[in-house]
Amino acid sequence: MLDGKTKIGIDRIGVYVPDRALPLTDLAAARAVPAEKLLHGLGVHHMAVAPVYEDSVTLAANAAVRALAMAGDCGRTDPGEIGLLIVATESAVDHAKPVSIFVHELLGLAASCRAYEIKHACYGGTAALMTATEWIASGVARGRKALVVASDIAKYPPHSAGEPTQGAGAVAMVVAESPGLLALDVGASGVHAANVYDFWRPLDRSQALVDGKYSLDCYLAALAGAFAEYRRRALAELVALGDGELLTDHLAAILYHTPFPRMAWKAHRALVEDDWRTRADRAARFAAEGEAIARRSYAEKVEPSLWAAQAVGNTYTASLYLCLAALLERGADRLVGRRLGMFSYGSGSCAEFYSGVVAPGAQHLAREIGLAAMLERRRNVTVAEYERHHATASLRAEPAPERPPRDFAGPFFYRGTDDDRRAYAHV
Ligand code: COA
Image (cartoon, rainbow, N blue to C red):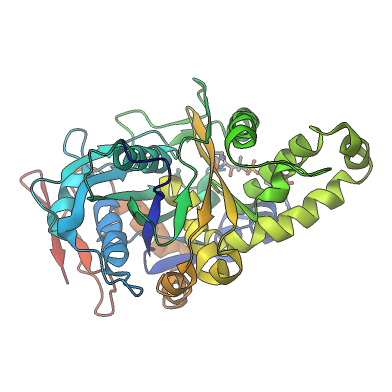
């Protein structure tokens, strides 16, 4: 075991989003729904579209090269330092062969690096992050680092209620001792697990089934359970509340799993109410002014993390970490030394509320994330093009897909399937 003082957490972060996007005003027109419903009711203005030459392997590898390349003052991460690779996805490309082993090869990781894929709906990325952190805390990593990648293509049937809440992308995180970005409060987290059928994808289907409204209720129930447990642990181990203070006063930002940005508002509204109701002296004021209080808190603590999710849509396992990358890219300067709350929810369900403190110097590393620039260079597709990508990018043996365009940033792309074997290449 490492001594309790050694900090462990997210050392580097790399994000990758496909270079195609569908404006949701166009989708609204094609589906004859008011654009306002998607733009304001759900809070998304574009959704990322994975072209046929991208899948969960290429998204993961393309995010991971960016995480390894992040240099700061200490230099890049040497692939040889990675002793554990976990890829979290619910967009697997095979029932047996994991996404992780393709990523392992594309990145040139050592043969001695343990590599595997995990799944628990959108919670998988957090499960992987916790496993990697605890692997380091246990001492068996012996100075090596872990690479955690959350990679997904959110896919619902065209014309379904879930259609505007699709998206695609990946976030890769190097997890290490003395992390450069976010030191996790190891062990001080709250978990809530319950068997519910809110979102699932039977083995023979390439698109998810969802009981949409019920999934929102399950999310909020899991948030209440996980936050109650986090409160118990945080007050015992991390935070001493001053006179009249609330636990959320000690969280400079709160990030949520964001299937669509409006969900983050619903979640934060519920969490603020929970927090205020823990103090008899504040409960009466919340009853009178709750909406305004929650809105102010949301504007300060939540909105700054949502700009990328508004432009990308749902990225399932990567969604919470896309919000983290977005927050750090534009806000790390003011957050150094401050604690962030993080809520992860995976349908089915397992959820976790945890926290971490932004590391000194994180603002220098965060300049390298490059998420805004990546979104800037995307090209819009038409609804017809989106429908073609949606129909073609199935999970089974495809015809050899088209090659990426000349300006493809990748660098990895899917070449097609030959004799039931998937092949990948570097541009
Ligand atoms: N202008 C502005 N807002 C409008 C609107 C208009 N013309 N019409 C509707 N809205 C609002 C609704 O009031 C609602 O907001 P509210 O929930 O804050 O009241 C929002 O837009 C969505 O409308 P709704 O009728 O609930 O949409 P829907 O039946 O099409 O379903 C989901 C929405 C999220 C349930 C659906 O997209 C879905 O199933 N998504 C996948 C599941 C998911 O992401 N679950 C999350 C938990 S993991």
